[in-house]
Amino acid sequence: MVLDPGHNGGNAAVPEEINQPVPAGRGNTKPCNTTGTASNDGYPEHAFTFDVSQRVRRLLQQHGVTVVMTRNSDDGVGPCVNRRAAIGNQHRADAVVSIHADGNTNASARGFHVSYSAPPLNAAQGQPSIRLARTMRDALQDADFPVSSYLGSDGLAPRADLAGLNLSRRPAVLVECGNMRNPEEAAAMRRASGRQAYAEAIADGVLRYLGLS
Ligand SMILES: [Zn+2]
Image (cartoon, rainbow, N blue to C red; front, side):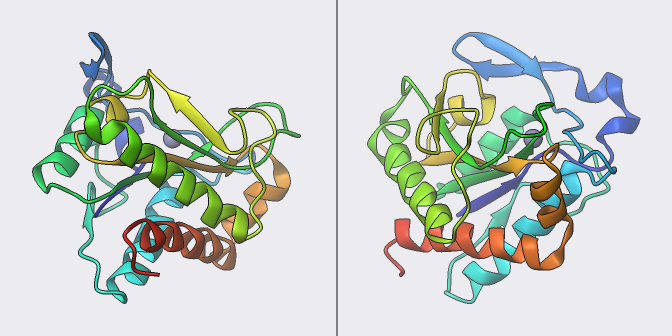
């Protein structure tokens, strides 16, 4: 499977590079990449997504799953969103999971949501991606993470505007773990034990989807 930690720690230093438009699917373009959000006290989304992804990778490898990461450090630039999708396609991943955290300015907004491409542009974006999204949602809920209070429905948010999902030819979802502007969720994301809890739930979702748990 392919794990895609959102953003990268070096993005902010090279705006001209990460603002380059790249194909985003459905005839649109998007910036190559973005800096991502941060908690009010300065914990960046790119650090959170990279740490959680490494934890997910370890957990999945313990179950014999081959894991490819779209980036292997948190101090580089990119890759662009279209390149991230291409990595999943080239490896013929059985599942692609992008990991993000949201930055909704409403501090009371909280909870996770799982996005998938809709309407689907190929067979993998249809039933397989919907099943991956529902399985991931169920695993996060079973780990007591609340569904989003402000976006989507029952923790699911079909999207037509996310390049990584639009360009995927493999079953793919994007997990927004929570709202970094919500003080309670930001505090959990800052704690190693909090990131481990997210990682265990996401790994559980992958294992269930792959029929390994
Ligand atoms: Zn993000």
